[in-house]
Image (cartoon, rainbow over the protein chains, first blue to last red):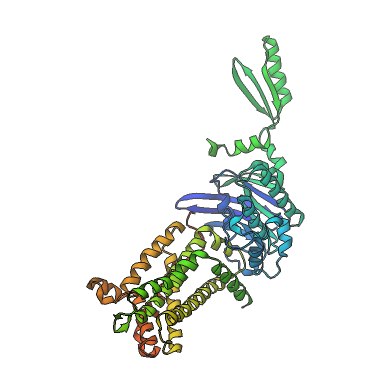
Length: 281
Length: 249
């Protein structure tokens, strides 16, 4: 296991930001923490990165406690923070070479430039880069030390759809390189597309954990909708055949039509919304 | 050591590319030296030729602009933008980073000091400084003390936008009342009393006595002690209040 988190808790001035979170990430896995803003994603990740202390619970990242881990541990991790500040007066390759010098066995600068797709901007100063290009440099700086484990905190927030697709390709390629990845996101499609497994956070707790396909099983699998007297009626059921049979039998007996009848499985989007509903109200 | 030299090279590259630092901390003291020197360089100030008095005062201006103000502003901006936080996730050890930043500041100030003295000799016919060894020690001591105060100050400033304002509000009045440009006794008594505790007052006096009056540094241990004490205060605040992560959270 690359990451083992057990009953992690963190309070800020009496408010519980993280309330007993547990999950594991296997080596080479891409794991996503999914949830709305304020759910505790960044707090959790920053405890794993060693930036924040925890109040209770145990955390093991690459075999060490991040609160006490030292230089050799930092050789093995790469971090993309939410902010992407960098020295404005260095070029892309200068920035990468500067950071490469911090590691014992860095990747080659031109390799990383290619990996994050900044070939055309490699000699440009950081201050001339667009937001998306700066974000790609962030990823490059996190990868320059050739880490085993990469943390990505909302790697595509604020991207246009094209930039997001390109970033996804890059992140997916980390999986092919055998890296373990922990990413946070509030985009469901991102989690669905990239992650081997997802933990959904709400109010500092994990409310669902599993492969994206499994999460749809967290709700009754089938939804039956129709209109009666102008009002929408929704049944969620494990036994769609029986429920549908009863409804239609009833309607036939009464000589009525089930208006706008619909039978379907909920999408991951709906699962996510129902799981994180409290934040959206 | 390899890591330190790598960091130092990078810091020097970033420093030399920063136009704001080049102007406000490096060139501006020299520009004021020239302007004030033309205005009253030939008059007598504090039993010295005006331009000689200004030469020592400008070294004081240089140390506080480069080692104190410039360093404090750069570190606050790097912290609040998240650059320091990013560095903490790399294997670069914190002491290595901070030492490289301090040595960069010191190199910048020493180059500046050489330029200021050369300017004085070229334009105002200043004589080559007496006691060059003692002067070098005094300049390094001043740079270390003011840099420590600058790092300490970063612990008291919360926002990047406010950094320049706070730093300027502290160091600009200090320049005047500590006697960088005019004799201290031209100011009212309470300002002189304030100046009597400020580190810049002692730095300028130390530099004046060594460079222009021919004292050695061990003749002026009182000034050295005050300067070192201020540096220690800065270092204590720095170790207690320095932080790597921005304030937003």
